[in-house]
Image (tube, rainbow, N blue to C red; front, side, top):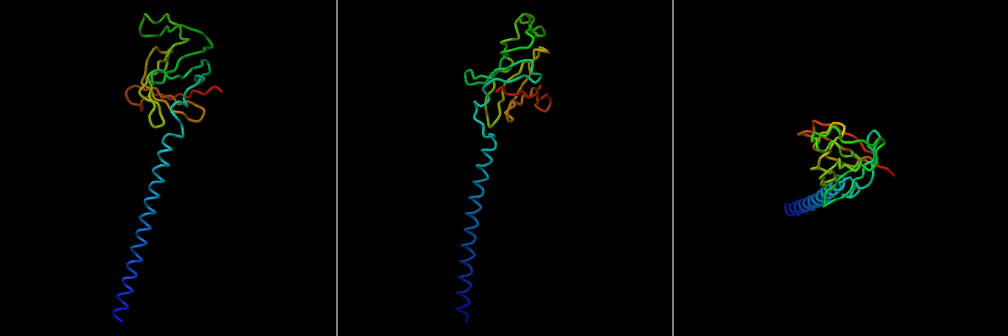
Length: 161
């Protein structure tokens, strides 16, 4: 009787260990799936050059071209409803230049689904701000800020088809 109890307990212990190993394997596979799905989600399924192209300004009174130069992303005005000079520029020597052709977005790098490390120039105020951008469907989400991104303003530029 004692021998059959020992055999039963040994069999039960082995069965538990096998189940634990299966659970550990299942846990590892689930963890890998979650890790890779979140890695893919973090990039929003975009490649870095998906940003390239033409966009309307938020007021639709200007067209902006986003392009790649020296491994960084830039944006310039390629059409204006009302051509004008850069009269609010803080540098008086630049106040006579045309806004058409002006680089308003400069020096962006792509990392993990967003574009950061760049600046945005606002010809309406003549000021330059730190900036980060990301694609949101057919819109380019542009956040200009001073110091921390918490203190800033977000505008959406719609892609021109």
